Length: 231
Image (cartoon, rainbow, N blue to C red):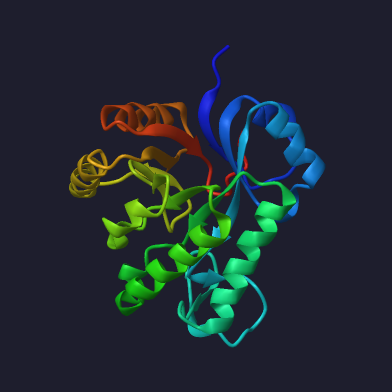
């Protein structure tokens, strides 16, 4: 049976289910080296999660006062030397633990602190230098294109067609947003990168819609719940 292209799973365990994918994105602290070796022996490429512009940890000198209203993490000063060292250190630790690559998250600083875009590019480049030749998968980061495409190996279009809302339910994006996302997807197809979509749905109908639309725009699809608890 052919394996599916990618899975985003933020729980632990489920090694046999994860073996059904070519590439899996995992939380680094939830997997021991032996488990990562188990997946590697089954030709599963494991990518460790890495946040580049938000911090879920305790108060630290690199944190801003503002927090992400959706997830509660603190926004950071991306160019703070201690934050740079923290991120690069986490990247090194994940690779040393046995991950084959990294999933670079929270790259949309053009929406919150646009002045940080060049600093974030510098940070991505620093991670690339430290992790090379490991596989790097970026979540969105459209504000850093085309330079970002020269550094990473793939891009995920999170919430391409379907989303979870502030009211606690799942829904397709309205038509104007879908059209805007389609325009971005067409630009991504010009890049020589692996392209994925990550959509959120809680019904077969919405999941099918997201999967069909991803394929229409040349994206390899994964559909999940908000907590990324499905395999």
